[in-house]
Amino acid sequence: MQRFVGKVALVTGAGSGIGRAAAIRFAQEGARVFCADLNLAAAQAVVAEIGERASAVKVDVADYASNQEMVAQVLAVAGKLDFAFLNAGLYGAAEGLDTVDEALFDKLVAVNLKGAFNGIKAVQPVIGQGGAVVVTASAAGVVGHPANPAYSAAKHGVVGLVKSCVDAFAARGCRINALCPGGVETPLIGAPDVEIVDGQELPRVPLRGMGQAQHVAEVALWLCSPASGFITGQAQVLDAGLLSTFAPVMLPIGP
Ligand SMILES: NC(=O)c1ccc[n+]([C@@H]2O[C@H](COP(=O)([O-])OP(=O)(O)OC[C@H]3O[C@@H](n4cnc5c(N)ncnc54)[C@H](O)[C@@H]3O)[C@@H](O)[C@H]2O)c1
Image (cartoon, rainbow, N blue to C red; front, side):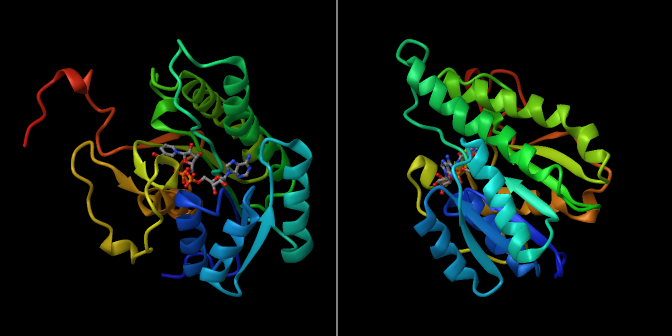
């Protein structure tokens, strides 16, 4: 399918994992893609995978001015912006409440929550009619995560931020949604990036299993497509059932 011919997409955190998968899939669907990342070399490597339909942009999402500059570059080159997948994020060294300190809390909030705010502020005034924004939160953005409360707090903030921005995007004829993935095998948790397959070939993940970056990318693209035109302000969980039952670790799990 070529769902996004003539469209311009911006992906942050595009140098790795979910962002890389989304950038590749946006390009396969015909979009002009801007791959933004703090790690410019990683973004450039993804651009090399994609080919001439992609450009690399350096951004530190935690920095307000850097986000403004990123969007200015997109507009200078492509003249418009249709979709923004604001996906860059940091899990950090998972520290529970006993050991997390102020510096780590501030860092995780700066990248994950303020980064989402900065990206939204940069794209909202310029995104085109019919456009869409997808922001990567986490399953840890809708339930607590004792192993990393600072990350969970930041991702909960992302969900509240996205819901609060629905009207501002609707005024431009656009939609905004959050994605809340469960565990995904990416470099964030030490797994390598994998080859992108045809969307039809993606395996169904067994109950509470780990997803692949492309599982998340496919939902991000769907949330940008006209097929999801009735959906805005949602926190879309994709977790192979991880959050679907009460206290799953306490219950026997069937075959
Ligand atoms: N992997 C999981 O299990 C999982 C689960 C739920 C949510 N998420 C979220 O998905 C998103 C993508 O994660 P991933 O698993 O693909 O991780 P990843 O580590 O593979 O990719 C994250 C990318 O973000 C970039 N980045 C980090 N800080 C940045 C900054 N300040 N400015 C710009 N870019 C920056 C990194 O360089 C990297 O390329 C993150 O928001 C993460 O919190 C991941």
